[in-house]
Length: 426
Ligand code: ATP
Ligand code: MG
Image 1 (tube, rainbow, N blue to C red):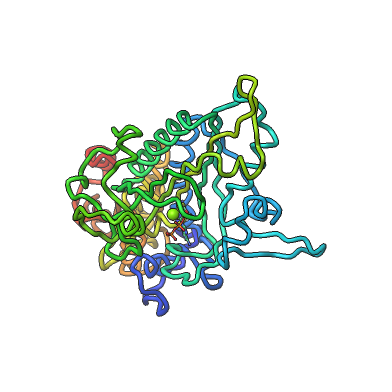
Image 2: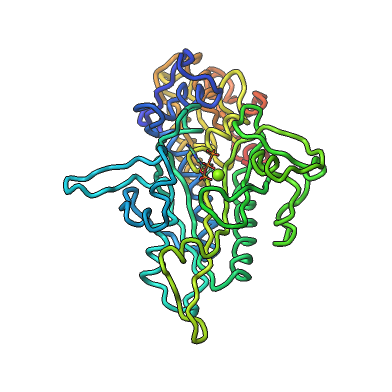
């Protein structure tokens, strides 16, 4: 991608209405634009990061036989009346009346809709287990939308749903999703702590949240410190059930006497095994050995659009964002400091083409801007590797490679660029 073709509206000044570092940097680097309270557009740079995250989530789900679907954002109130959540969900639910006076709502989650899909198609235990997921906007009229996309009103969630024939097989599915979540967060380069959670609004018995430790996080979790470095992916369902880490709500309600460390965090994922709750309220029965049974269900959410903000919160410095390579919008930015010079221009165009040919995702800064602006934009948008081409190339065929993370710069001969990148494991 050429910078001259790519829309990155960066700002020099900090936005006045943002407090959280990630919110400030997302606005400043032109990733998002606020449309109204808690509602954001994703601009090209932000959307590219979001798509990288989505791809990791999709690939992991697809490789585990979880079927991707797309349910609508607008739902009928009828199904929410069947589950009795139409009244209990409260003011967070955006209710809509259509021209025929029919009550609709903008979905805050999709348990009801997936149950009605299951009831329509699944008739026998032979069709089970079945797993579905979708990545779709949700709306929750949060009382305090703040911190940008961390707590938005409209946000993107990945929500998956499972249908099993009984509790035993439901628990096995739950264990698999627990592990799937750990592997997704690992692929995103995030160290996540699973904690036991009350099942709350959705109902049921088994529930865990996946938290990222953050000083600025809105959640509090309680954890046995010896747990912090354990390998959670080895846990089986009995150990998952008795894991020694809790949300603050569960910690208080269980009146746990053991002294656990309290830490601040942000919730990035949440899974529930709610059993027959929705299949019962929808009278969704299937054949099972001459009997009729209610399928055993679970739901599994990830806050997709919260993740870029959480990563930035964790990974930034005074100059801007520092993207980990897993989700960086580009792997390399090639900066031509002398865009009006014929030889650097030709060299950069050729290097850009051969980097692309070698499958590097590159942003070529071909703008006619001062070097100072190019440097500060590059540090602000946080692409992991900067290749800097300027006067030294014209005089001595030398270019500089800068790593965004530590701002270290190395001068190399321009003939050695590919060898050098390989050595850096880019
Ligand atoms: P929170 O405790 O942060 O309000 P929640 O428990 O209400 O979240 P869930 O119903 O568990 O949210 O939704 C699944 C995931 O969606 C959460 O783990 C979180 O990452 C994300 N999420 C929830 N609310 C928001 C929001 N307002 N903005 C962005 N992401 C959100
Ligand atoms: Mg939750």
